[in-house]
Image 1: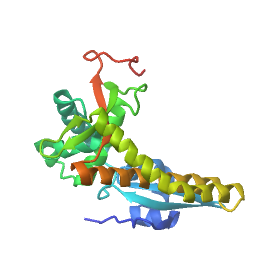
Image 2 (image 1 turned 135 degrees about the vertical axis):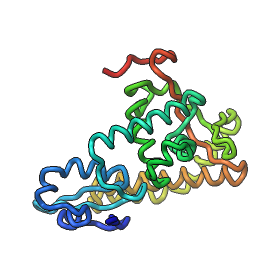
Image 3 (image 1 turned 180 degrees about the vertical axis):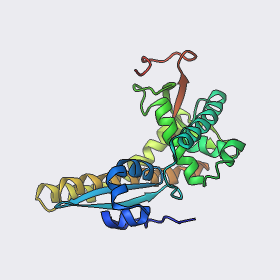
Image 4 (image 1 turned 135 degrees about the horizontal axis):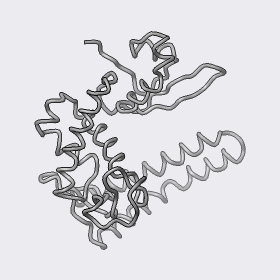
Length: 250
């Protein structure tokens, strides 16, 4: 079986992408969107342009790449994931895609698909976004988010439990302390952008990375003290079963 590998952090030309996909120029021309839509299940990437040339910068890998399925196989895969996701959420509506994937990866229908753990997570994430939407006001094909609550995860049972107000306040204080440490580098970035030393895209990306690092550090500080990371978790609901605050998506 042909192995497909893209190196995280590397930038590939269109010609190199075609070679790695193992397709002809003609196939790429006619099926590029289909190939890239499938590729997004396994890799996160940025696209840049130099004249008429397109380059693909690989940012993150989610799982081992598999070529696009035929339509019937794709529908079968999606149906299996949807079925297992629904089973989990009917038992416990406070969930993340990561946790649902941890639960369903050991179910026989998922095992039979022979998917790597990263692939199970990415398929779960994509299906849940379609089924329940991405926000409290959006909704998906079968339901939506009723709420989001700050929780910790019991790894033994794969169940989320709510943070007390006191613990949430403590986590916010940890975050505030970390954010104070980022003020100076952020101010320098603002100045560099204002002075034209960096472009807007680089500015936004750098500030986001600094803030995300502060969040992760605060999470680790909390975990060191209490043994788990705090995270805000969606509470999912189904149309015709739960009371939702929005109409079903058209």
